View 1: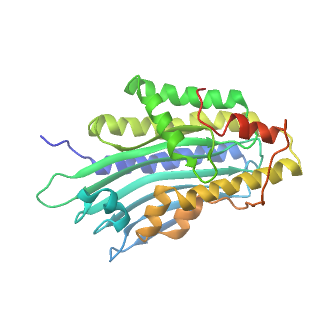
View 2: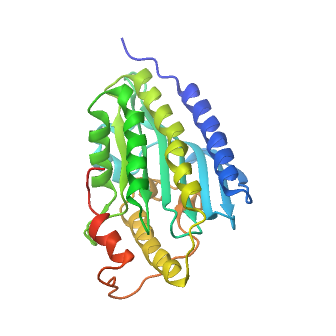
Length: 306
């Protein structure tokens, strides 16, 4: 008997999750608030649907960040998707999710990203094809080992009720996914990443994305609170802007969510909300041996156990 797929329950959870995360991040910032833009598109040749884009700028802690909810529908998948998943051809689809990226002012606070999403493709007379995906990851500029250990310990605790192997599998998936092959380095220190999750059945899979979505702030906000008073100068600021360039490179070249959104005619402003407000590139940059910047390259931009 096919599983009961409760799309409305997923949507209600995701909208509540967006509210909760925004409230907690506003409290952590203490100054800025999220400005919301509600958008809607009528179904047409490309994506229909809508969402709530929320962006915070010029905060005391966060230079810029966004927490988006979207629920879109399409008559057919983009060619780039069906090339990898030919079974999706000829099916109408829905995708909904919450995605966020926060770019702090202080270089000692890591940038962080989180996402939980649900996808379903349907065709009359056939069983639906569906899955959950998501995760969260941490991108420090001046890392503290204790912060990375706390981040991963929290991720492991979130995963524990779902199976002994879940943390190690989804950590490894995250290390592999958030990797820049042209730089031969990871984007940061990883976390959790999973996609195509349906083998547990709908109910357990849904419970897992609830745990991951709600667990993000448990992992991130204590690090923000611990590091937001660290003193920094122009050197640290310039290195932060340089490393933000890696974030841009990954999101525009490799990130599947960004590419899917742009190729399927999604809402560009909401998709590119993840970009930092300022970034820079420098030809042939090499950190000084023995410096804090060198420590990042030597000890943190490669998969490791925490």
